[in-house]
Length: 548
Ligand code: SF4
Image 1: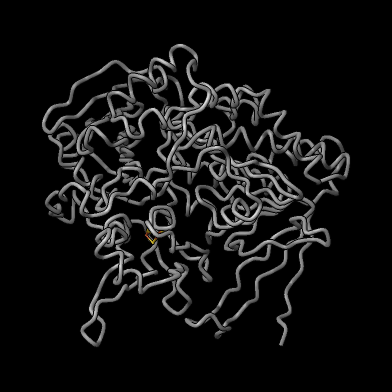
Image 2: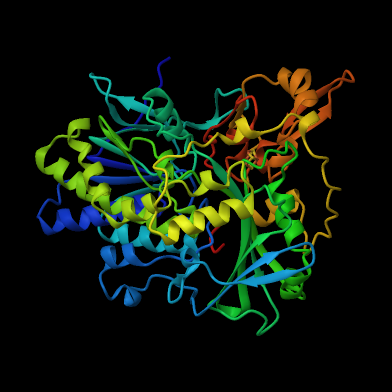
C-alpha cells in the first residue's frame, strides 16, 4: 500500500541547523520583513532531536560575519560567549619538549570570542524562531524531491519508527515531503544529501575534498590553572613529521577548558587512529601538567573539511545552493570554519533575496552566488591559502609549514593550483606501512577509550532500527581488507563502531555497533574500498553535544 505522507510546501528550505543555515535564514527573513514580504515561508530542518546536539567545534570565532548579521553592537546582542582571547601561545611538541614558537599570523586571535558552537547555534535558532522562521528538530533529510524538469524541489525527511529490517514498526511515522522553490544545503561536513548531489551532478571542484578528524573534550581544571581567554595551539608530537594535524586548549569561564586534537586523514598509515592520537597527546608532560587534577565533563569527535578553495564544489544549481562546511569553505590554516560558514550563509541570503524578487530559482539565477562570493572578503581569505594543505601533503610538516607560511605572508603568491589526493587514496597497504605503535593504555579518567568517549558524548541510537551505516560488501572485510589494510575501520572510528568478531561457525565477520556512532563521518571518508556509506538514522539519534 502506498504510504501517505504529510506535505509541507515552503518557499526556502534550509537543511541543517548549523551556523551557515541559521545565519542565512535569519538574515533573509530580516530583509524580507523589512521589504514587507512576510508571505515568504522559510523552514530549517535539523537531523538532531535538539538544535546544537550534533554540532562540535573549538571554537574561536572571527567576528566579521557577526557584525554583518547583528550589527556593530553584536557584543550586546546576548550571543553566548565563553571568554575573549587575551593571551596566545604556540608550541611545537617533541617527545618530551615543548618549544615555544612565535604565533604565526594566521593564528592571531586577539580580542576574538571563544564560544561553544552548540550554544551559539541554539541562540541563533531562538532568534530565527522569534523572526518567524520555522525550525523543525529531529527531521533528518533523507532524499531529494524533484520537479517535472528534474530540478531539486525540496526534501523528503527520514521515516521514523522503522524496524531492524527497515519495515514500518510500532510507532511508524512516514517522513514528510517538504517542497521548496530553493533547497539550501548546509548539512556540515560530508552531509549525506550533499554528497549524493555532488556525485550525481558532478559538482566537485578541481581537488577532491580531504579531511581531518578531531577529538574534543571539555575539562574542569583546578582553580587558576588555565585562565579564561588564553589560547594555546600545538603542532608535532604524537604525529610524525610527515603527518599534518595539531591541538588546541582554549580557556573558558569557570576554570573550564576546551581541548582537542585533529589528525589529518591523509596520514597514510592504515592503523591511523585519531582518537588514540588525541589521548596520547594528553600524556605529553607539557599537556599533562596543565590537565593534572582536572576532570572530563564531555567529549566527542567530528571531521572537518581541510581541502579549502580548490575542493569547493560548485555551490549552486537548479533549485539548490550549498553553503558552510558542506561547501568546503573552512580555512584550515586558521583552524576556523564558523566565520566562513556564516559568511556563506549571508551571501546565500542575498542571492535568495534576488531570486525571490525575480521568482526565479533556476541555476541561471542562483549562479549569482558566485559573483557575490568572488567580491567578498571570504574569497580573498580562501584564495590566499588556496594550496595550503597541498603544501603539506607528501612533503612533511616542516617543509609544508615553511612553504605555506611564506606564501601566506606574501599574500598568496605561487602556483595557482596544486593537486591533492583523496585521503583514502593515500592509505598504504599494510606491508608498506610503518609498524603500529604500542596501543595506549587508558586509565578511564584522564585517558579515555572510545567506548568511554561515546558515554561522554551522550550518543544514543535505537537498537531496533536499521543500521544507518551501510557497508556495501562485508565479505570484503575478511576476504581482502584484513590482509591488505588490516581492517583500518577498527582504528579510525573514534567510537568503536566497527569490530571484527568470530561468527558462530568459527569464521570472522564485521560487527557494526551502530548505536555507538557519534556522526563524525570518518568511516564514510577513509574506508579504502569506499564501500561504507553514512546515512541518517531513522530515530534522529546521535550525540548530545549541547554545551561542548
Ligand atoms: Fe564516525 Fe563512522 Fe564511527 Fe560513526 S561509525 S563514529 S561516523 S567513524
